[in-house]
Length: 194
Image (cartoon, rainbow, N blue to C red; front, side, top):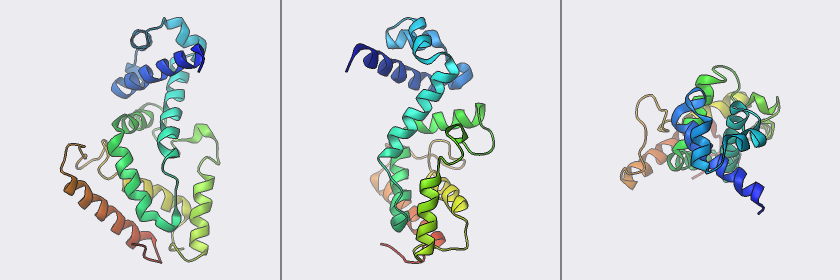
């Protein structure tokens, strides 16, 4: 990996921590530069602006986490519990998503900056599972997708009632994941998977 890639990686790491802590408005490029051990001008040469840097951090973090958890519409219950574990293991992701919602995209599709068809693959997979009789067909794929993601985030760091903590007993996490899986099965599945 060349020096440019290493430098860019350090910037993204420092910016992730900064944006997760302070949001877009509260983040300071000088702190990011100091934490990345570079000068401020290097940040602008790589990312042009603080807003573009946030976009890069946000997309990088979301892509990195989601890449490890592909949607399997034949096992929606497993997908929901895998997302629970992801949220629990990456509190910065939830904070970045929350800041993006608060400061950038208060309504509508959170990832609309990625284009109209950003979720097309997942929506098509859900529609196909509906046609095959695996999932109920009286809920639009777009609505099922939104509810599935929201269900998985029930105990994520921005949860309204109670946020999960990685230090809680494993039995508590297992109980929650069992409840998530069963809820997903009852709500969306025609063929009940274990």
